[in-house]
Structure formats: C-alpha cells, structure tokens
Image 1 (cartoon, rainbow, N blue to C red):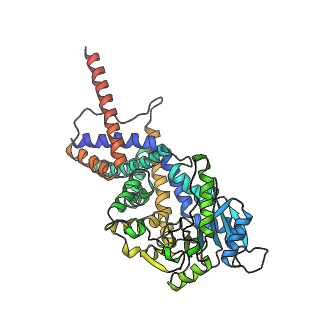
Image 2 (image 1 turned 120 degrees about the horizontal axis):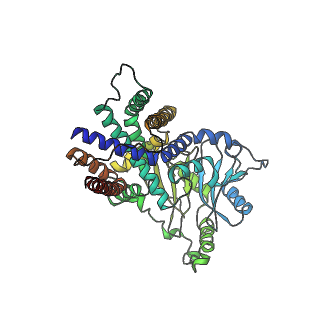
Image 3 (image 1 turned 90 degrees about the vertical axis):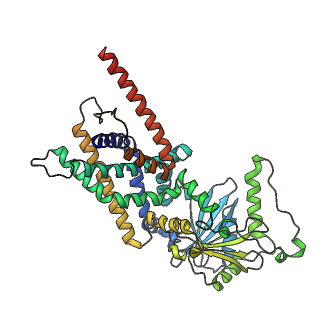
Length: 455
C-alpha cells in the first residue's frame, strides 16, 4: 500500500508539474520583479517622483488641483496621495471614460509630470503576476489553480523525498540521480517558506480571495470591523441652508453613464459648503496623522473624506507598517474627525492578512524581507530546473515517460491528505474532482484493453 501511495504521488506530481510549470515560472519571475518595484520606480520615474516644476510660484494644494483639472480636461481628481519628502504629491485623476492618470505636484503644488497607470512598472508586474496581463475570470482562476497545485507539488515532493531514495547516498550516482537529489533537497528546504509566500498571496485570488474577503466582512469579530465596511456619514446640518436641497446629477441611460459619473465627481470636488483640501489637511495634522496618507473624496452629499494609511497600497512611498495602518473619516463640511479604525481594531483574520500581504510583497521588514523572498524564489526556479532535467534524462524518445497508472485502491492516508488540501483550497478541490474522473476513465480504458488482450 505504501509503495502504491508513493507511485500515485509521483504520478500526480509529474502531471501537475508538466502542466503548470510555465505558469509557475511566469508567476515567480513577475513576483521577483514586483519585489523590487519601489527600487525600480524610484530610478525610472525620478523626475515624476522627486523633480521640480519650472514654475516656482507657491500654490495651495487646492489651487494645484484646480490647475491639474484645467490642464487635463475631462479628468477629475478621485484621490490625493500625500507622501513624505522628498516624494512629490500624487493625484489620481479619472477620465469620463473610466481611464486614469497619475499627476505629480511638487512642494509648490505645481505640475511636474504625469503617468498612464496601466503601464507603470508596478502595475505591469502586478497585472502579469495576478492575471498574466490578460485578465478575465478564466485567467484569474488559472493563476489561482497554479498556486494551489504548487502547494501540492511541494508537499507531495516532501513525502516522496523521505519515502524514496532521493537523499540516500549512492556509490556511483548517475546524472539523473544527482539532479533528483538536488531537486529533492532544495525542494525540502524551501517548502515551508514557499507555502507561506503562496498562502499570503491568496487574498488577491479570484475564488479563494473572494471567500476570504466575504468571510472577513460577514464576521467582523474575526475580520474587518463594520466601521471600515460602512463608513459614517457627514452631518447634513453643516451644508449651507441655501444649497442643502440641491440635487446631485443622476445617471441617465447607460450610454451616458460615464459622462454623468464625471459630472458627479466634479460636483464632489467643488460642492458649496465643503471644506478645502488644505483645511482638511490641517484637521488631519491635528488628529496626529502623519504622512504618508491618501485622501479619497466623498462620493455624495452625505459622504465623508476618507483619510487612510495602508500597509499594501501598491504605491511607491505610500506603504506603512501594518501596525500603523489606519482609516479615518472626516466630515466633508466641518472637517470634524468622525471616527477611525486601525490595525488594533481588526479581527484575527483581518490582522493576519494585513500582516501577510506585505510579507508576500517583500516589504514587511525591509531589505531582509526582500532578500529572503528573492532567495526562496530563485531556489524555487532551481527546483523546477532540476526537476525538468531529471525528467528529460529519463524521458524516452516520442514518449512522455510518465509514471505508470495504478489500479490499486486509494489509501485512507492519501484520501485524507487530498481532502484536507481540497478544503483549504476550494478551487484545488474542484479541480481534484476532475483529475479523479480522468484517472477513473484512464484506468477503465486500460482494464478494457487488458481484457481484450487476454481474450
């Protein structure tokens, strides 16, 4: 039975590796690129991030924003990112067709330059890593499946390493045995850190990520506090009496939805009675909230200014320690701090992933985090390389040389292991059903062929 288990793990390990290796190489290389996106962007976008405008007149931040809106017609400001010196202030501007632009303002709030967000280094690496730069539900599921099966590869490799002869000394080892030894040894060393890296990346995934996020929302005691899910509202009494009953523009038919959304956003940044951004920043300082932080405008007449510090913003210069993460809500008319929610208010699930995501991205504890992640990723690529070499040496011409199909019954241990993995990773569990069905069909076909030969 034990030999049967070993051979079955070997067979599934082989086929899983065969099908997902191209994806794993792509995800690993793009992951390495994303590890160093801040270092790359600080150099590639030096002018936008740290440069100065030729215009030296000192403006207020509100004047700078108005100038940006005049310069980039049909764009509105949806978010303002205020970073620590020497970084410039970054505006996220949204076009009426839904596209975005990053605009940078220097210390005088004069325009320095702009970027197309879609093609910044960080966003390209993120798009490749999460959806192969193609996007769509099917591709997102495919990426998640590759991550799940990678965990199976690592764990099944551990089983075969200690049950087989990979690490046993051979008097005169062949080239295949040498490759297999390195494949098994390095795979064993990186299994735990690699599984941690994969699991801390799953909150972004299409299937399991949605499940984790919905669980965190439905159970605030272990996940995301209600205050963070449902922001408070501004005090309507703070709106000037003369304009209090003015109606916001409403969406018309679908063909004009984008235009109306733009009109709505313009109204949000220019509404009579709203405090200026400079006034808001003064209130933020009084609340002892230091840079870096981002400001999101209210989305309607009852909305609030959302001022937040995040540990996984994906913006160079904006990330903070998970323990400094905070979301605050300010009245859009009075500037009063209404409420705030920080890391200490999260449930265990919220804290776990607030801590885990920057660990995955490589900036939880500075350069040491980056270096460890880089070493693990490079070793993982070597494991793939030695695995491929081992197979190619064993491979016969015009044949996959796959491990043989087995007719023996599945052991309780094997079934328990696969069920546990399927429960931990639901999409993996669903794919596992398909794999079992394929194995049953192949087994039945082989039995039929053997029966016909016997006749």
